[in-house]
Length: 118
Image (spheres, rainbow, N blue to C red):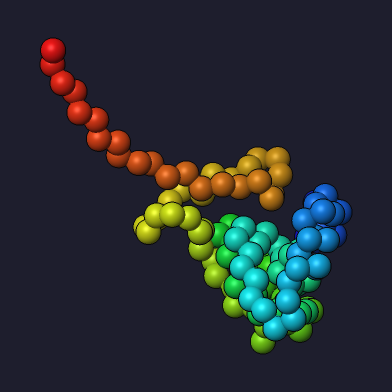
């Protein structure tokens, strides 16, 4: 862990989103955290709801699992080391060189075009 991890865990960079979730997530509800990072939202949501957390990046996923364990939330969270998106299959995860929370996946689509002669 480093200072950037603590920054992401503190959720200080998205106060409106965190406030919205805290106000609207019903006790006993279900929360889906796509791109869970190290679990900033997952840990907070799991204190009142069941959480499905998706995080594909190996380092972040290991820290997510540790965060869940340290907060004793194993019974409230199911975590998956996969990317979530509209396509079934393997994708390439593009890792950021500077920020651990800004990874993304790249999907290469085969586009079909029809050319008509005039």
